[in-house]
Image (cartoon, rainbow, N blue to C red; front, top):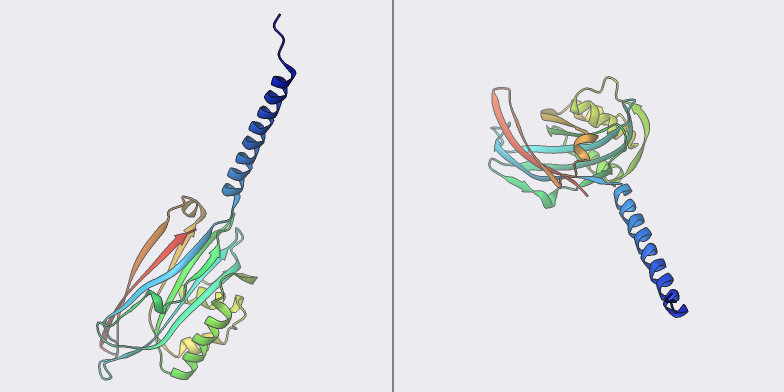
Length: 230
């Protein structure tokens, strides 16, 4: 019977131990990558004025307000991020690009859903609107903002969801008064189910058309934004 040299046995044990350690480490690393929370980033890409509401002044005073909202399985807001842009004087065929819009982001939840909401308004009171925009970007545009479990309830329109998100961020419901005095050019809401978000699609491009007529003046704005999972 051929005996194995003690030194050979030692190397076999060490090699086997190192191999098992690498396997465990690799498995732990893979598990951490799977469990790592993903983030949804909301970035406005462009806003273009095709036709204006104000034919006399040949310019619209525009404010764009947008929100990312996480809603739990009980339909309550648990986290929000808000952004706003303006007050900007838009002329016909003018286009504003991505570098002018602040991106916002939220962690994708394990339960519930996420919503994007946008409201485009033509403002009457420039100073009040500018104060609101500054307030939103200072308080509500910081990214992850814990909310106070506000129930969506009757918040069925994009405008209402934006109000709820501003309230959740601590900006206050008085913002509603400032919006109500303005002309709403368009509002859109987009629901994102977790099954869709967990597909790990890198980017989701979305293009919206805000069209209508006010006091016999027709207007048309094209807004493009992008959702990306990282």
